[in-house]
Image 1 (tube, helix red, strand yellow):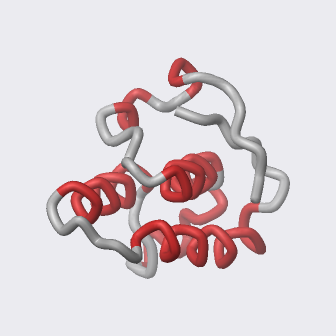
Image 2: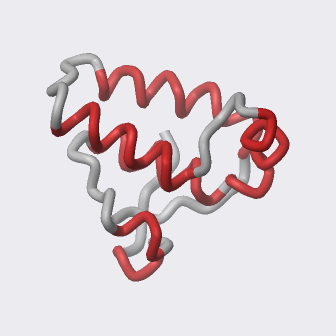
Length: 94
């Protein structure tokens, strides 16, 4: 898992309202996703992915409203699926 370092000052203002999500694995995932958003733009524009702020809002909703017990594991899997698209991107923690 990538190292998460830094503080909330490094988080984009549009994501701050959604962080922390409440599951550390999801926080790491969404920060990597946001850092890689430019590379994901073709998939976002085709509708196969969401913009980072929308992905963060969805994860926060699933954590807060649905109390999804499998959310942390899902975020770990999504992070692994994201790696081939985003290797080398810095990750900052909330």
